[in-house]
Length: 150
Image 1 (cartoon, rainbow, N blue to C red):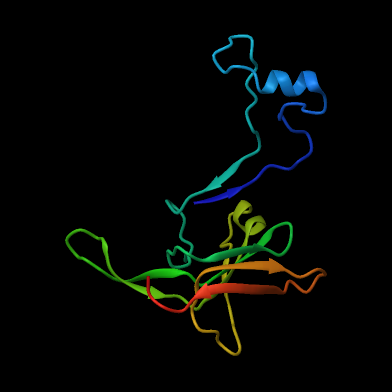
Image 2 (cartoon, rainbow, N blue to C red):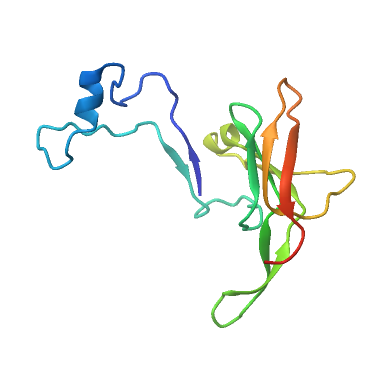
């Protein structure tokens, strides 16, 4: 599932710029006078009814924003083998792939996933974190992570 977060302008979020606004927001939720604010402009993309080639499912990966519409997804653990009867994962594999997700392409109905070429190819990691470098280079540092099994 992909979700595009709403823009920060023209929002329905509560005004917390004053003590009165904060007190109202933090009031007892059972108070009938309390106003609930819903987020708007959410855009959810699901795998159903879409013919895109989705990146392999994973956990323990890192995701790093590199622009206002693009994120990079690296590594983690994926499923190598599944049980035919239960469709449960029976063997894990450490992933060494890098994917770009472009949310603007998803909103326009195009395939937002693109596997990036890594040269040299890094060994797979899981449990790592990353930080984006300043500038328009879209470079990231990947820090930590584990190469061994859990």
